[in-house]
Image: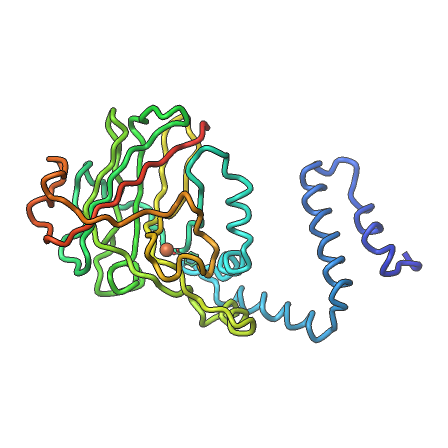
Length: 288
Ligand code: BEZ
Ligand code: FE
């Protein structure tokens, strides 16, 4: 190795793996090393810049705890999370999108047609649709989790004024594959900018806004679990999501609601105000 040079170091390092290295580990780590070295050569990385990068990662570690993972946020704002989602989303199914940091396990089970509005202020909306397989057949027994911000752009868990599971639910489809829930419109919000990710956004002149969205996880036996989000077509940040989560098939329309057209099982039917909206959104799951 005394003769190692910028032109031989990459191949020298890759040659160190033992014969019994898992082939996929070899492929992934090998490509990572090649791209990392090529990146340093391409930009002529200085010692100061290399140190700055390591400082960012160190601060990411320091700010990360059980409730916040700055490394995931790095991956999100650099587009890696969405790239991984897109290259792993099978065609003909609902696209997946980022999980985000605000999912909580154990949200209460709500029957189909149930209500999340409760005492929440904000524009009311009934969201309804069907979980289907790729042939269009409804999936019975699919479990749908939904979580979202309140009107103030905060999730329960971020906002001490909201109850623990406010605007969160789990719902199981019947034989018709249908889900339906009354809720309030979520609001756009900013990803956290008080850590190193915020420094990167500011250094590159980017804003931290995400368009408003409903988060969903849809799981059913025999199908791949879908982690996704659904975005309203009229959101001002739809084409500038800080974490690149929007896909064209994940855009929904808020249409003016008509009480007379609501199904009988919508429990908030007679309590909804006259300006409520309706959203229809179906999920298509790939086979597991
Ligand atoms: C969210 O949608 O909750 C989210 C996603 C990525 C980063 C921050 C927040
Ligand atoms: Fe979110």
